[in-house]
Image (cartoon, rainbow, N blue to C red):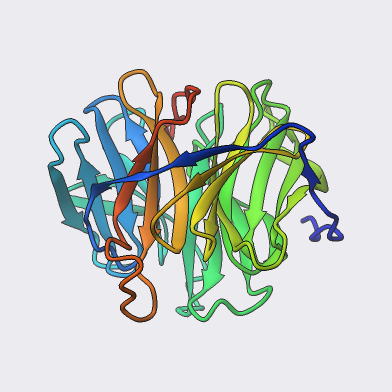
Length: 303
């Protein structure tokens, strides 16, 4: 288990920062939209509304948004190699489809105040996701790795809000966000064993700019991170330089994902504010931007 790093400052690029704009794609009014991921099998954007435990399947070509309920809060969904999906739920990791699911590995069974949050799969098909307290209690959560044989490993403890996870192009680094630390961290990663070590800070989000949430890596190895309470998504280089900002007409941006047949569209989930706000009438919707770069095919769970 690895302790959180000391906080350090991120870097600001010496080059001009590109400014982009996201547009509304689906006025979903999600309470807590999260976890978008492109499913190439069906050409749909999968995403979840965490609190009610609803999975959405959005067809960007038609705007059709189908959904099914899981009966408990759901933090993430990923495609499964053998068919269907894998889920990060309140009770743990599960596999299934729109007709039901089977719990593979229970998490925090004696702590009903905890739930799994954002997650992603590595190149070996392992499913990573971490927990948070329903009241976001500091240090109450952990980061877990679900292996392809269904076994569960605890990779980090002392986590406040486990969020974005991604990997470098060469597979030797893992990027990770614990929202409570205000930054994007990087680990050395061993794809053969799934081990992580040497945690250090890549970029720190300055006060007043929002809090880091979900992230995704593009084909150039750069990291796109959503900013909760920041009205935006930022793009950072692998060295931590700020390269671009996507302005979003919603305050609570939760996660970006590349999708579309060419993986050249950037989809963004958002959450509703605590109170109605006329400045963001489409909060809780799914937004889309033209990022000017392609993404990578998302990995599926191989278990």
